[in-house]
Image (tube, rainbow, N blue to C red; front, top):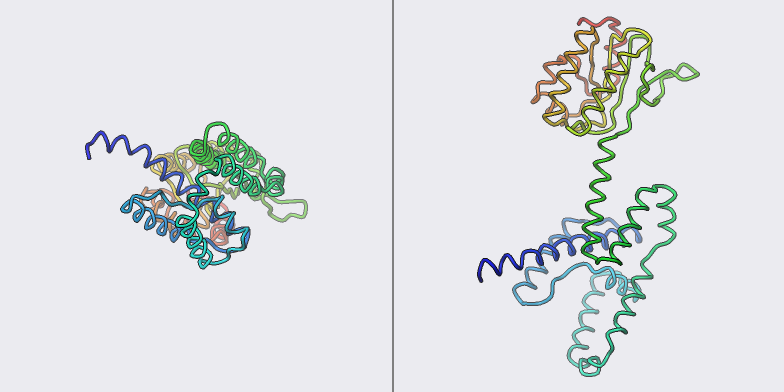
Length: 316
């Protein structure tokens, strides 16, 4: 085998890989949800890998979790692995005894069978639910389906993966933020993080709903500065509810240290509450714990609030 032959096979192998993983995962997940069964993705991938290794050594076709073939097995009542052995036996009998008559079967007949099964897999009720509850996911599903019809299955799957990742990054780039503020009854309740709102005179409790990384660090820093600057009374304690934050990258850590220095010059003390062990490790590694002070980093929000409410003035 020459290098040019290997390079020629790589794009085909990559396409097969994407198709096998995506189709098999979608099939197992979809039918698992239908029958309220848990899905072990690692076991599926291990089985597919073993099957395709055997297929490669024996010169047979690639193996994947086919949505249409799974739907056919489901329609005839398959509920266990015994059904797979039974269907394999039927295929073997057909190959031995019926290949002669079947060679005259028009391709359009096979295509119509597959098409009919595929049409039956479209769950319009669930699509309506997705449209009502999550319009973004609905548009993604429709656009992916249109791409599959217009360009092909491989292109549709790749596009769906790319758009899903883009949608996830977009949520992380613009996460939900909030702060605790008194309601009509005087109780602290979560409200949108609007400059001018405070939790109590001299105190702000702020929650950022995503990991801190280079793409959203400016949003975090700008919002914190705006909350402190536009507070109706001087802020003495700024409590960060770090529950949703599990990771801080290098760029965000450097910006956070600069923010801590800026707030310290303004006589604003910063406290971190609900810090997980993973976030604590990042804070230690990036020098954030040292910058904010180890006694001001807590694993619970209750401890952070107790410190803020027990010491009304920041030591600077």
